[in-house]
Figure: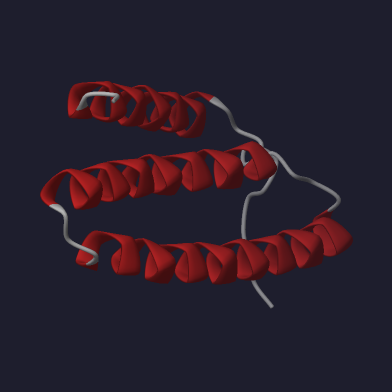
Length: 100
C-alpha cells in the first residue's frame, strides 16, 4: 500500500508545476492549463485524505471540483476564442485593453 505522504508529495509537486507555469508563462492557454493542474493537485490531496480517513466526503467534493473546473475551462476557452477573433493575440503582453 502506498503511504499518504507519497500522495501529498505528488500533489505538492503537481501544484508547484501549475503555479510556476501560471506565473512564468504569458500564453493564456498555458495559464488555463496551469490552473487546471493546480485544481487537479487539490483533487489528488482530497482523494488521498478521503481514502486515508475512510470517508467519502472528500471524494464527493472532488466530483464538484471537477464539474466547476470543466465549466471554468469551457468559459475560459470561449473568452479566449472571442479574444483571439477580435485581437488576434493569445499572449497577455499583447492585450492592452478589453472592452466590448
